[in-house]
Image: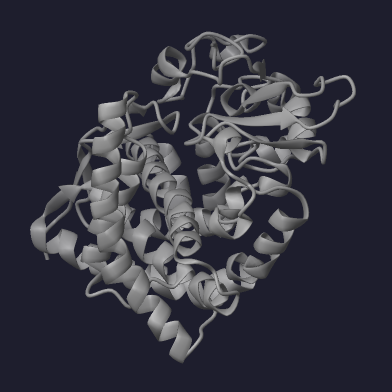
Length: 400
């Protein structure tokens, strides 16, 4: 599959920037992306948006086709459609509202950054993905309600083991048995030390979080685990990668970094959204037509919406689609991240949370005395989630 409208490094309709390509994950994605067998790849921004917004399509890909929908209370809202999905999503929508982000979540973000900065200044250097993981876990844990673990560090380790094991499965019966055994151990530890204490605390004193809602609605044990891990996967793994990617761009581009540090919040968000347009963590979304979508999909046909192609579609980006241009979205009068958070009823509910925590993380990090990127990350590919991973980046600053 081709993940961009043009080959990496090539631009069309943009003679002033011939050869300019600011993307960092395009090559590894182009070499590894694998749409679901039999699916039709949609690279047009307009067509992809129409499909994602259509009430005639259902979730597909990411194991959605094999999920047992007969027990909706035991599966994540991610796999649901229609009224069930709307109801589950609406029940916790307030947790992701702009006012809640400002009045509640930013306190967690700033508190976490206080700890990250103090630790980094004491050590002098640290792996960037470890620091971004701490931010992502602390924020997601507060939203979900995983606040009664022994320590946040232990919670982060246990969640990481479960999530990494869940996307590391290989085909074959023996591998499946080993996978199930490992998952049983990891999920058991997460249940015992993190989720169960939170459930017991919410039964005594409910709070405004996902676990309190699940307790109120009498979710099953399996349902609670699945929902928490879905929020964890979406709110932790993807945010960790995006923070590192955005930091990499800003360390590399002095003028862009200066604009980020001297501009206001709107400017910072514009920069982050443009980086995410070029290097989206999620690369594609699948939808199956439950009935014909006129002019687009036949009944039962599966579409693979290529986020990467849609994000560089010159019909919506304008010229120089591979150039990092923070003013692009305002000039083109479109949403800043384009298709990077999806669209339609399944658009990522935590999009604004992720942008806010990334903004705060980088604003604090880049103002540290002597801060620098000691080593750039290696761009790896996770075939299970069809997305990039950035490992090996090390950031340093003056001790103090």
